[in-house]
Image (cartoon, rainbow, N blue to C red; front, side):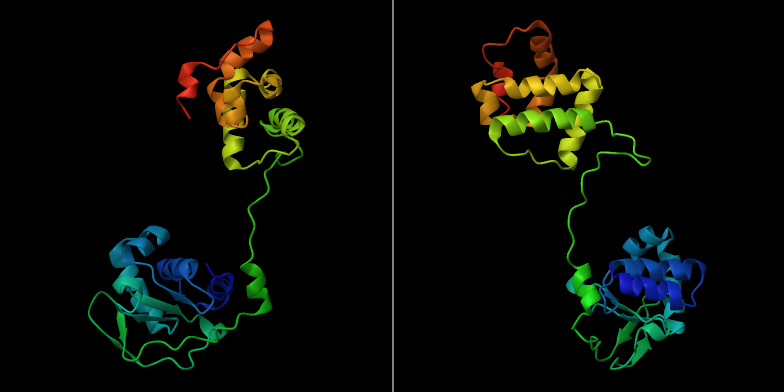
Length: 240
């Protein structure tokens, strides 16, 4: 998705209703030159319209001078769209286009000459993205469901391996299920106890949160009774 093109559609397009929805749907797939290659069914799903409504919207956008459509000029024979909303996108160097059958698609005689390939500094910076940080608090400063168990797991893991564990969405989901099964009070204590176990199987899987979840009830029993299992059950070993 190009933020530049999406913004241009919002600010400069004269399209209305379903026509505007289709323009925004195309912008959601476009690069900074306004080029995109979505199929009619994809646009229909994105805009919450029928394929026939999408085809009519494409005709209207072309009539408004806000869209060029080059039939079968995209990857694998897909149509190639170029958005031209208002004065924000230039039509210079575009070839003439003529109407053709096919529900509003327009066939270009010579194709499209792309705009300058040199992105602005703003666009270059936009291409550098990073994964979102894991949230430990809800809006309003309240701790999340997994904060306490994560802190217990992280602290014990770091003591054992001298490196902090990785936290991502998968780990968060696993720890959330652990809290569901053991409760918010016991889950952090069982997580810390798990890291104190030196069973060869646990060491082999580097005390993964997945194995913690799979054997959490057994670990809970060991923690509450103080009786460590001699070995991990054969059923767990078979999971490797």
